[in-house]
Amino acid sequence: MKADASGVVRARLALDDYVDGSEVRPAIDCSLVCSSEVQGYTPDNPEPVPGYGWSCNKTSFTKYAREAIRCAGAVMDEWYGRQVLFVTLTLPGSTMDALQQLGRWSGYAMSRLRQHIRDNCESAGVIAVWEWQGRGALHLHLAVGHSDKRALDRVFLQFREWWCRLLVRIGTLARCDMFQDEYGESLCFDWHKTRQDVQWAEKTVGRYLSKYISKKASKDIEGSLVWPLSWWGMSNNLRHEVACRRLVAESPPLEVRDAQEIYEALVARLREGNPKVFEYTNQYATRERYMVALAEPESGAADYQEMVRQMFEACDRVGGNRYSPGPFDHLGHMARLSGLSSADAPVSLRQICEMFGVVKCTA
Image (tube, rainbow, N blue to C red):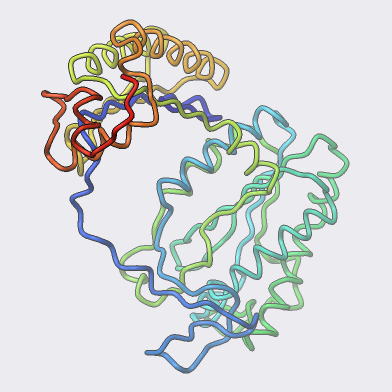
């Protein structure tokens, strides 16, 4: 059983040990940078280029990123309500050099962004998401929440000037005009003409950010782009809260028939009060079954607590002490892996002890 801050409750049935049959994926081709002005050094590319942070080829959001952003959005809605600013920061320039330099210096921009918000709006909740525009430029979407509206007002008034100053700084480090368009004209001294957007929240944070975390660059420009250091980020207070609200409970080992009966009972309980319930399987372990329910955060937490109680009561009822985890559980796992035992023909604890030469056994 799993639950998180956004109200998502998951039930999982694993009929045997998880075995990932997929091929081992190669490590991401990236390089560790020792200087804030050097990036991209590898044995195949000995000539470093100006940049900041890591240079890697992550082309989209991972499943973990989408779940973390959704949960953080639910926490912000609970903490701040509509007292949240939605900010969109756009690159004024449109030359290929400017587009690539923003990707190389995206880590620097994110670092300066968080410091700017901490200086002007201490302890604010922040979620940041990069998105591709159709022209191939990265632009940044932010959700900034705080309990003090006057602190948010300062952020509201300063973001355009701060973002333009940051682009000037990046342009100086990268030796590039970040304001120059494809016709050779520059808005470097006309900041008021740049397109930045700051507005107060009119919908939930999760809905605002959900449409951006699934986008990718179009195929015709994908080969000439530089991916950002990280596609997303959040403030430490949100990260800590999301981690604290991620709940996980596992049952003791059960026989197949008992596990299926308990799983079906939990699924029936999950369907009672949740109209949005979905079932799926693991493509690498087809004997695993999952059920996901989408609910409000309060009702989701209540469903999780009730189902955990129901699960452990059922485990005690069908198995008693026979299924209670103990110091010899790892021996049973080894017996299954070695072929001496199976889910359909389990062996007793005494037999397991005899297999592995354990003398003292209290079973």
